[in-house]
Structures are given as structure tokens and as C-alpha cells.
Image (tube, rainbow, N blue to C red; front, top):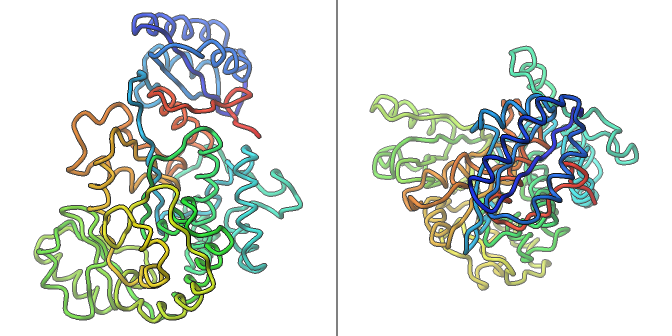
Amino acid sequence: MTSEPRLLVLAAETSGELERATDDLAARLAAEPETDLTELANELWTAASSGDHRRIVVASDATRAASDLAKRNRRRVFTGSVEEPGPNPVFLFSGVGEQYPEMAAGLYAHLPVFRAELDRCLAILDGELRLGVRAVLHLGRPEDGPDGGPERAHARSADLTTLFDRREAGREIDRTAVAQPLMFAVQFALARTLTALGVVPAAMAGYSLGEYVAACVAGVLPLDDALRLVATRARLIGELPEGAMLAAAAGPDAVRPCLDGSVTIAALDGPELTVLAGTVDGIDRAERRLSEAGVPVRRLAASHAFHSPLMEPVAAPLAALLDGVELRPPTLPFVSDVTGSWIGAEEATSPAYWAGHLHRPIRFDDGLRTIWSLPRPAPLELGPGQTLAALALRHTARPESAGPLAAPPLKTLPGHLESSSDLETLLTTLGRLWTAGVPVVLPCPGGAPHY
């Protein structure tokens, strides 16, 4: 038996053979509850080298795996078939707002490739900021190695006491100066990890800060310059007056009466999902006005009015910093937040584009439409939770024939209230991609990729 999750795979030439193989494995595990899942995962992967009908389950003990397989538990057992052309993974990089203490600490502890890439990012950051990021992620000191700090619990409790403790411990993580470099580093490390495991993106899209990650992965920005740019950007934002943001379940026409000069549209995330940004007083008025009109609204956990004219003072110092950065045409296609279309080489290599990026509204709705124009896209969220992937799957441009990777959303890290561990979440996504024919380098030994 093992306490760590392991990815168990099955493959067969026909669907009938797959069903019989599933029943056989379920019976074997039920009869042998002491089965070493690490050895079994290796055995199953070797046997599954061929066969276009595929099924996976992620489990940490044989009894649970037997039950899930026997019942074909749809929340834990995933089935697919290899078709041509295969799915095209699309990496989605989020902005800030979903981060939480110990985020990705489980991957840092168990996946050397992820740990090496995250350490690479942290080494570029200035000393105080680097230590701040390590502290909020509970990574310990670099010299301590992967076990130097407390490992993330593999079953997060959502009771109020735990939430209160984490909220107190995680105050630092919500500071813009820490949160933005942290999210960049974690998402970049995830992208490098997935690529090492055979999941190569056909395209990418980033939301706000996430577009910087996409640009770096695409070779537009060298990693050291990208991190310094993000850290400087975050510091400059922190020096600006406080602002606020509000999400409204309405289109731009419905929120237009609220645009009084102190409030502007910051993002168009869907036909009926608009984000407003502005002064605190202005957003207070907009919230009251929309609520009185029966429009569902949600105040965002934002310290400033991102993607609004209130961010314009940041543009000039960013432009000066960018003058010393060599910007290169992208080697991978990614969507521009500014236009909602594929970014062109001229835009990607323009300091003015990146300097003005923060005070222009995000056209994520148009960006998702661009993504769904690809053949068989498989949107995959890199970062905590599944907000962007869920938006992609609900988008009106998504075809009915989106395939088995369409739901639930593909994600690489659990959200802050989810009980699944980092490793379980990532292994499940790797397994689902493999069932659809993505050439994943499956884990060894037995479910924990290592390099």
C-alpha cells in the first residue's frame, strides 16, 4: 500500500476488452488490498503501451481504487479513445486572485523537475522577495532540500478553524508585490514541467499577468528579464492609490450607465460577464446601482483598479525598463489580451505594447473565441483552480463535439478549498490527456514523474 497517489492506466483494442480489463483489475485490487500501487502502476503502464481505448484512475490505496473502478466512478475514473487528429493542449495562465498559502508545495516536494524550475525562478528574484515567496509557499530554505519545510497536507480541511489559520498565515500572499512574482514563477514552472512530461502546448492564452507567462514560455521575454519586469510592475502598482474591481453578470451595454469617469470596463470575460475597475467610491456606487437593477455582482479581491486608466502612471517606468530588454517574435502562438486575437510579432516585440498592457481592458471573451477556432483545442489551466478553463468550456464558440476533455475542466493545481492534493490533481489531468491521445510521458516509478 502507499499513501501517495498513483496513476493507474488501462488500454485495450476495443471498448469491450477495456471493460473486461477494468473488471479484472477491480477484482484483483479488492482481493489484494495490500497491493503495492507503485509496482502496479509500472506494470500497468508497460502493458498499456498499445491500445486506443483507454481508462485511468488515480488512487492512494488499493481498496479505494477497486471501488472506483468497479463503480466506474465518474469523478475519479476517466475514459477516452485515441482519435486523429489528436487534441491540441492550450495552456491558460491566470492572473492573481486564486493564490493561497502552500500552493504547489506538494509538487515542489515530489517532482524534481517542478522544484528545479521554481528554484530557478526564485533565484532570479531579489533576496527579500525571494524569501517572502518561499515563506508563503512553505517551501523551507533552499539548502534544506525538498523536505526542508512542511509538506502540504494531502487532504486539506475546509473547516473554519483551518481557513482562519491559513488566512492569518497567508496575508503576505495577497500583497501585489509578492503575489504577482509568485504566480508567475509557479505557472512558469508548471509549463516547463508539463512540457517535460510530453504535454506541449499548441497555443496559449494569459489573463493579465498570465500573458507575461505566455510570452516568456513563447520566447518573447527571457526568464530573468520577465521576472524582473513582473517584480518591478508589481512594486509600481503597489505604490499607486488604492482601487477596486467588480464582476457583473451582464454585458457591456448593461453596465454602461456606471461608467462615470471614475469607473471603466477592465475586462470582457464573456457575453454576460464584465469586470469593472475604478476608484473605491466609484466601484461602491456601481455595485449599488447594479444590485438595485437586479444584476448579480461580486466584489473582487483586488487592491487596485487593474486594466483601467488608473494604471497609466506605471506605463512610463515600464517602458524605460523594457528599452533594455531584447524582445523576440513568439515561437508559440498566444492570444493577446489587448486584441483578443493571436499576437503578432510586431506587437510582441513592442515595448509600448507591454508598457500599456496594464491600463488597457482585457478582451478574454474574444480570446476564447480565437482559441476555439483551433482544431480540437483542450484548454488546460496552469495555476490554482479552474476559473479560466471553466470560462473556456462555457464559451458560446465551443463546439458540441468538444470531446471527453471538455468536462470537467482540465487543471494542474487544486483550488484553495478542494480536498485533492497537488499530485493527485496533476496526475489526473495527465491521465485524462493520455486517454485522449496526447503523447504524455507517463509517471515512473508508479505515478510520481521524476527527472
